[in-house]
Image (cartoon, rainbow, N blue to C red; front, side, top):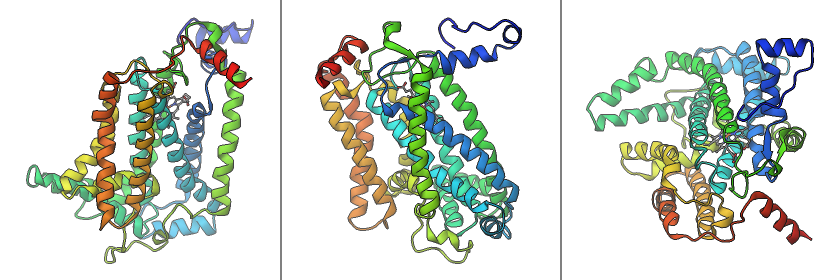
Length: 415
Ligand code: HEM
């Protein structure tokens, strides 16, 4: 991709192909010879892990779709049939449902890495923005996927989330109701809703795939950031992607798959909700409607605001903020390693996000609401007040002159 190509095709077929469609050159320059900073740590393996998650979700999803029936009368039964009668259907389903959880676990770690090492800053703003788009697409895909088994949580989860749009009635009377009716394809969550959710749930992963291609393209123009946040200054500060990072990423992928397998084979329903094994019933509302764990922090923000429209705006705003993050945090030093004060606030941010997750899992009453409000306030303050202020006020400490200087000094410390 960026920089001059290092590929030298062998005479014969390789040269012939290279002059017509330089596919091998492309693969070589992106995955083999690609110059990668020599100091990447394990937080940089999550991109590769995410790529594996995406491919696994697409493969298991396609085979599940061969046996799934998108109709309100048959969806629940068809999933039970997959679990009991389809060869290895249980494995496919458990891989797909736990795979979604693993995907979100990896994406949250990948994003937290980006926040810590300032990977969203120039010259990687577009790379970051594409990431936020992927995150939104992932959320939409997972939400619609959860509706498909047509259990109680599927139905009521869909009801709660689609109903959010009715809050726009507060802005223009009738607007919200029209949007919800349009989304549902009727006057309630029903068969047309299930059908369009299935269609979109099948489509969106391919859209994600395309945006991931752009994401990786945008990565290969400036190249990787690294734990020091200092840009590569000479070729000696890089190593070829293969074999150095193919092996390191491969190792991390194996460890990650072991965790994944532990869930699939030993506790496949641990992350799900028991109520989703009850067929959807529009006449019986579950005592507590809760989304999957990966949506809980955003669900808590939604409920932290007493006003319905306010809650919706806060929830969408919390992700919307990420789009402008590169312009909110103008600090020159990227990595929190050298930003002692910002680092503390980053840790607090992670804690606030986890606290929000806990609040989202609990009934919204008593002190939980207050705690969620404080954590929501901190979430917004981190991006809108703390990072912009620290960019002006904080003096970074001990920033090395180059990646090589950083690596050599940590070598000395290790001796
Ligand atoms: C399907 C989901 C995703 C896939 C497959 C993916 C893939 C990758 C890969 C392969 C890399 C390079 C290796 C690495 O740094 O780990 C990368 C880097 C990066 N990704 Fe993602 N990504 C995904 C989602 C996201 C999201 C949601 C964000 C942020 C909102 C994001 C932000 C970044 C950034 C800032 C980098 C540059 C890291 C650096 O060089 O320091 N990515 N991504």
